[in-house]
Amino acid sequence: SSATPPSATVLYLDHCGHPAPLTLCYHATSSRVLSSSIDDRGNPSTITEVDSAYCPSCLSFYDATTASSSDVRGYCPKATCRSCPSCRANLVVNMSTTSTSSNICYYLCGHCKWNSMECDITSPAPASDSPTKEEARAATDALGTACKQAIAAIAKRGANEAVVVSSPAKAFATLVEGWAARSKEAERQRREGEAATIIPGRRGDAARNRRKADGPGGWSVESLEAAMSKRREADKASVVAPMVKGIEVQRLSLSDSANVDDDDGPESTRPNAERGCAQAVLGPGIAASSAAMGKLYPLSVPLRPRKSRRCRAELAAGRTGILIKPKLNPLEGDSSLRSGHGQWWKKDSSAVHVVPRVRVVRQGQLMLADSRVRHALLLSVTNPTLGMIRLRLNGADLRSFDASTASDDEGYTLRNIRIDSLGRCRANVRMIGSTSTIVLPDMVELEAVEDALFDIGASQSKEPKEVETWDANAILKATECDDEGLSVCPFSAVAVSKDRAWIQLVIEEDGFKETSTPGEFVALPATLQVEIGNGSWESSLIKSVEVKEGESDLFSVRLLLAWRA
Image (cartoon, rainbow, N blue to C red; front, side, top):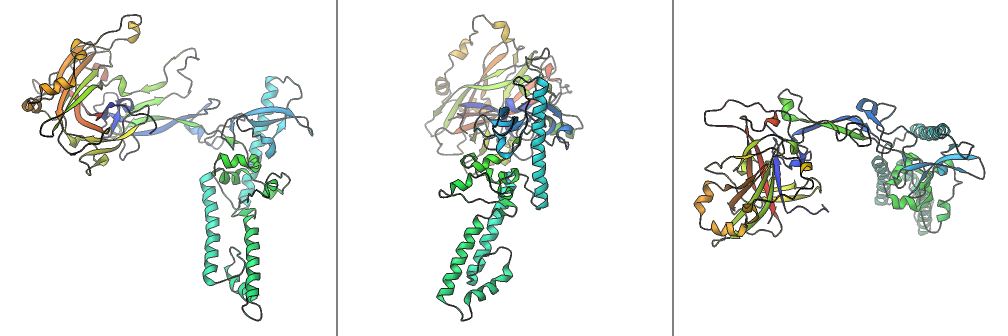
């Protein structure tokens, strides 16, 4: 990715074992598992459904049934929503006066100056210099009707020719098939020693053509030269042939460039919308180099879908499992409307609103005398809810991670992991050990989150003194000879301030890989445990279950603490 990856990140594992940033995770109502929007790996934790669609140009919106109907078919039906077939920019409706007619209305591209007059798509414009809104709308609708009729005529003509080209990819594939058939025929005739003219689809004439070329006296150099001359002429004629399997093939050269710009050619040789799709796959640069590409028809603007997402685990349990559901109007929630400002979704179960956020604040490493590597991390945990939360960071082992992303060629490496939600950065993350503990760390209690608007104008809050003076090198040197303490519990609380806590982690690398690559991402597994009940995490709406005396009902989330070595 072109974006710069972060120096450290904390990934949350969904119920299918896929690591993802917290901003890509969801927590279903009263659910005990996390889901994510990671869809590029096997067995995703969520499914998506199209609820509605809208036009990015005019912001018209349709429900899923209307958007897929025969009248819309996934494209905006409005006459004003058209894009340039050459550069894909939005077209505008322009009115002008020509030398041969009165005022006309046509499409114009402000980027590459393409216009629809070259493909004869126009409509009469209002006679007055200052037309009313109704007159302008009627002229625009007439222009859209003319465009639809022209495209329908091309589709009908293509059906009569038994040519169906529905996409640039299919058009390009048809071209490749046509040229492959010609190459195959030429190769077959070359192996057989034929000197006859290449005529696709007439294999039975090859022997008769060869006997005619040999003449009554048999084979001769003169007959061979004459046959080769005919073959060259036939090849040249076949290249400039207007159609190959129903798709136009045009030869361009510097010597006859004037012929390319000739607009008076026969109708059968002019590019149409369907044949232009095959030429458009060559790129806008080639399209702009030929005036013939200017005769392509305007393209309809495709609608953009608005999707809802559901949790697979909740669906398997017989519940709806709705994680996020958009509103029908894409502008609903915008400040341009009178009400509903900021309410963009019918339902939004993003995990950032409920699940505590863990960050890597600082980190350091120390090489011990026996080539062992010890790491020290300072983590911060923030409460995003309006209620009190009791939690702790606990150890975990490597068995809780997705095995489909692991590779054993360099120890235990997670391949192509999404480490950033905004920059879409991906990296390979090398696991350097487990954080399993013998003694459980103490619970920390976080207060409800404070509204940031209340602190506007106030002095900036400072971090606790223990956090400001925390130094990774000092911590590592102090624990250099304390191997027993690390094996008991590597997690310890440094400070707690209102809705935020700082936790220290000191861990030793297991030595999966003798030599590390500078700048690579290394990671450690961990578990975030949140207490349910007794006033803790009430905003999650999770029902507490009965546990043994002296124990607590815990909600566990698997974490991946990753940083750049």
